[in-house]
Image 1 (cartoon, rainbow, N blue to C red):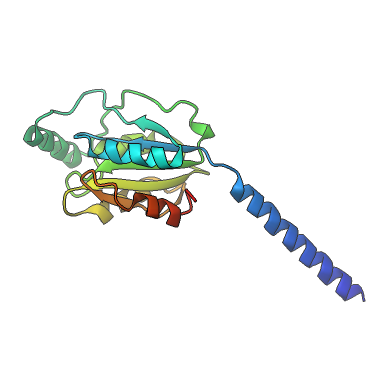
Image 2 (cartoon, rainbow, N blue to C red; image 1 turned 90 degrees about the vertical axis):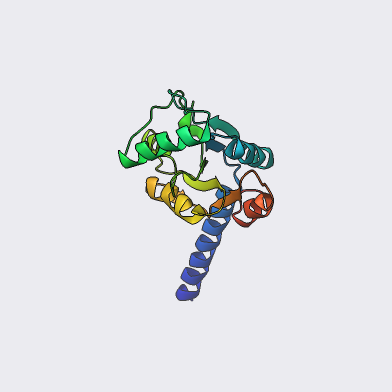
Length: 183
């Protein structure tokens, strides 16, 4: 008889923990969509994600603007990568601690995330956060860029990332549902 009572108490405790966990998971999460965009593609994708999630947009803006012409911009980006530079960021996320989920987005530059993404990820404590990487690209290196964002945020949990070709938003809503960020 005593064994049955203990077994029932264990089941009751496990059931209550499961219920409590479900309630915690049902709590609305505060979402930040942090993005760096040079030509507007990543900004477009970030805005679409914000529209679907209700998240707050944060533009990662360099203190010193990149050249507006394509070739000079690629030369600056290449030099930054080769020197492992950390371009300064003009602005800061206000109330960082209130965000649970942080989307981090950027274009693919020289086969990976631009160096300003390193600056951003090194500027904040990601412990207890969930990071969702996304990027825009023309033809390749999507997976390498998404993996770099994960690598730069080792203290965070991570959800599957998304790569958009240029500013194409097709598939984003489906992806957000698959990773459980929207219903």
